[in-house]
Structure formats: C-alpha cells, structure tokens
Image (cartoon, rainbow, N blue to C red):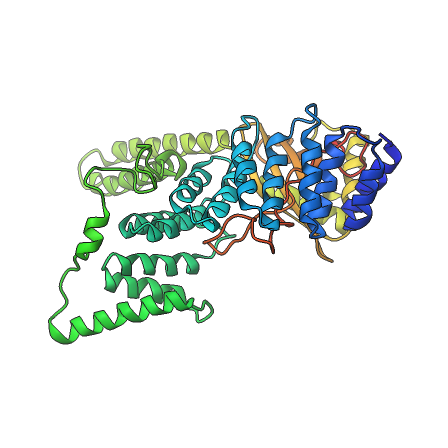
Length: 471
C-alpha cells in the first residue's frame, strides 16, 4: 500500500473532502490488494457522497481483508448502504450477520438498521424483536427511541396495552438526544387503541403543550376521537374509572409474558433495577428516614447520645455513598468537565491546560496532545459514551467544529493528581462511527436514504496518522 497516498486520503477525509478521499483511498492500494481500513474509509466517503451502491461494494471489499477485524461495523455499514439503494432483503441479511459478530462493540446499531429494514418490508413482529434487542443492549447510550419504535410495532400488531408499557418505559429512559413529545404522542395513540380515552387526551396534551410539536394526521385523528369520546361521556354521566375496551382486553394473552417482548417468549423483563439507579435511590431514602427518626428520638431521654449515634450512622452512610460513587467513576472534575476544560484552555491559549492532563504524561506527550487539539480550531467536545471505572475511564467524545462537522475520539481518562477528579491520558481519533440515526423517537435506524450517510461506521485508526495517533 502507498503510505503517502493513504495519509493524504485520511487528511482529505478529516477535512470533509470526501470525493478526493475516496479517490486517494483507492489509489493507495495495489490492484486486488486487501486493505480493510482503506476500503472501510473509502466506503464511508462514498456514503457521504450519496454513492450508496459503490459504498456497499467498498465495504464488501473491506470484509475480504480478514486481518482487519471489523466485520460487525463493516456489515452494519453495508446494510445501511444496501437499504439506501432499496435492496432491503440484502440489508436484512447484512445486518443479521453483523449481530452475530461476537466482538462487535456496538451491536445495537446493527439491530436498529435491521429493525427499520424489516419494518419497511412489513415484517412487524420481527422488527419489534430487533428494536427490543437494540433497547436492551448495554452499549446503547439512548435506548428510549428504540423502545418508542417498539411501541409503534405493538400498535401495528394489535397489542395496545403492551404498546403503552413500551412507551412508558421509553419515557423513563429519555436522554438529551430524544424528543419526549414524540413519545407522548405515540403513548396517546396507544391509550386510544386500548380504550383509555382520558389518558389518551392527557398524553396528546403533554405532547403539544409547548405549541411546537405538531401531531401527524393519524395522531390528530386519534386525538380528536379520544377527545370526542371523553366529552360525550362527560355530558351523559359523571366520570367513572376507565375500563379497557373489550378489543383491548382481548389483545393481551392470557399467560403472563414480557410486555416488551413482541414474541412473548424471552421471559426477560425491563427495566432492570440495576440499570435505573435503584440502589442509589434506596440509600437516599434510608438517609431521609434516619433524619425523620432522629427528630422523634430527640424528644426522649439520652438525647445527646442518640443524636450522636444518628450523626455517626449518617456519616457512615455518607462515606459509603461517596465510596460507592467513587467506584462508579464519579469525580470532580468529571470526564466531561476534564475534556471541556482541556479544549477551552487550549483554545484560549492558557497554560491551565496542564491540570486537565494526566500527571503520568511526559512534557513531550502533553505537548503532542495540546498540538493536536489546537490544530482543530474552535471545537466543542461532548462525551457521548462512557465506560467508567474507579481509576480509569474510557469515553467516546464527539468534537463539533464551529464551521460544521464532527470528529469522534476515543479518550482514556485516569484520576488526576488529587485522586478525586479525572484527567486526559490519551486521545485517539475513532473512525468506527460516523453518525447515528434519527432522533424523533420513532425511527432509530439510519436505513432511510436521507440519513444513511451520517450513520456510517468509520474505520479504525493508524499508528502513522497525525490526528488519530494515541499520544
């Protein structure tokens, strides 16, 4: 492989010149030479250009390089490219193969693409299974949209009560990237289908409360039907507890099944308390309970001793809570504060950046990190994925440029010199993911033609790259 061409191709790719990048990635290879990284990045460039068929071929050629080891990402990208060309059956086959790659770090992306392709093929139950798999994947940082899409599947399957549960769970997992108004509108449709008209009116009201979200024609029709029913009932008799319609009652199977399982076969229920802060909430409630008990005990004899005991208990709980938080990766500054502070200090030309870098780094290594960041210009880093430990953390950081465009880094954090906060130790440009799917809460995948390019997974980095080298 021509290393000079390859470096020039990567520079063009980082600069957003995808046409030049695609040509130079191809020129960097000898004819019939297997080179997974070059073909992977060439495929990503072609996706950005909207040349989906060519991109699919590039990903296929990258898969031929078995040493590259990115089968899951390549198969997912190829599935997105095939879906964008209209080859939905081919996309389903590629996405399905991606989910079977045991070393693929983000299988939820393959499940999302698979689910959307299956929905377009009318295979709703299978799509629901895929959406559920995407939602419960521990690597998925935003399961809410997948759960909302699962609710859409349940409505189409005639299971409105299960749809209600799915939408309610989606609301529990809403993140900054999700639109709860869209989920509330879907919840309104589910309530209406279940015969719970008053609840439906309330859900539609929450969706449109700010005057920004506009109901779709189908949602508007359901809203008007629910509102008319409620008004008619109010004019005849006083309000009474709602009962699901006979049709809704019949939609639930007699046996108890997971309401988030389209096939009703897994026996796995969501949400898992260990994923929802259950134990943290319990500890807080224990502290509050002890405080209330302390007020009562002060009225009795030996108040001083009892107050001391209560304070001691609270201190033990507080220390335990702090230790628990420390082992789960909490710190001050946090990982987000550390990377934001580093970028701000470098952009301002301040010498304060040293406090955000690992004390284990040499001056030369620190200078290399600062040089790489200063070369990005004005940029805003955001931690989008975090695997936090007690003394080390690995994060996915999206860096958005002021003039537009985003670059993804893999950042390794270690505890700072005060052993409380976090500091940056290494930054490696990550070509594993170029973007995600839609955030409207109903279509998570990037399989539609408009979003296909943004969702392509990027290739891995190279030790010779300037921006992407670990420093």
